[in-house]
Image (cartoon, rainbow, N blue to C red; front, side):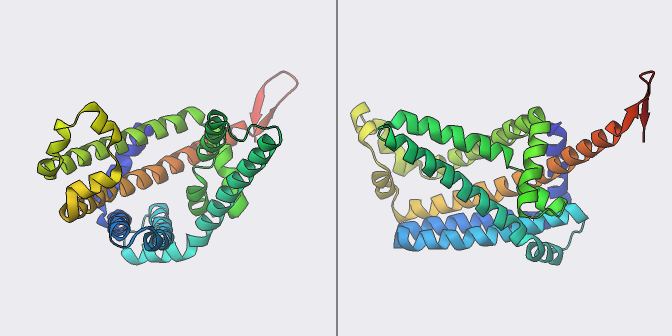
Length: 280
């Protein structure tokens, strides 16, 4: 199921370059945040990242709206962003705060029984809370746009669809992760090739030196030129990942939701006294 939707998403990107706008903007956002972090520090870059995150939600909302309606103009993306921005932002905030609340309650409970310092338990707890939540609510944004759901309706719709089509959803995540891993691997090779001369001394490090090597030392090693090269590579990576993943997600949701409607329509009916099925 997922492979066909990925092909359809790639066809959409090929036919309409407007779908590349969120990827272009996302790449610029990430590259700018990276440069701001290395030039001005985390204080300014963290606030810049928050602003970029809101703009990114706006563009993704517009992209989903374009795929829903089949329109191809940039103005349609902007109109869709205005219409669906809060329908995606609000449920996302509900999910984040709900996860934080559950995590805080669990932390308080564990601290009362003296388990708050157990790092292994905290790791297991984080995974146990985050992974199911992310999977079950992963399609709240597409539900908000494609089915005009409100805040809690979009979350509920995502949970129902994922629970009904768990195997297909897992294949979606597996294929999406493989695409992202392939793009990141390719851009990593590009980054190493562009900075080969600066990274070459690492090859002569001893095992102890490699274990003690820190990110700050790596930044100092590549220097200002390496920081700009890293920004360029980050732009390329997110320019490719964002439109592919989100168009794939939209097409996959549309197919999954339509198949669910078909199943529900087929199930409406009743058996007579002889066990024969009559559909309404």
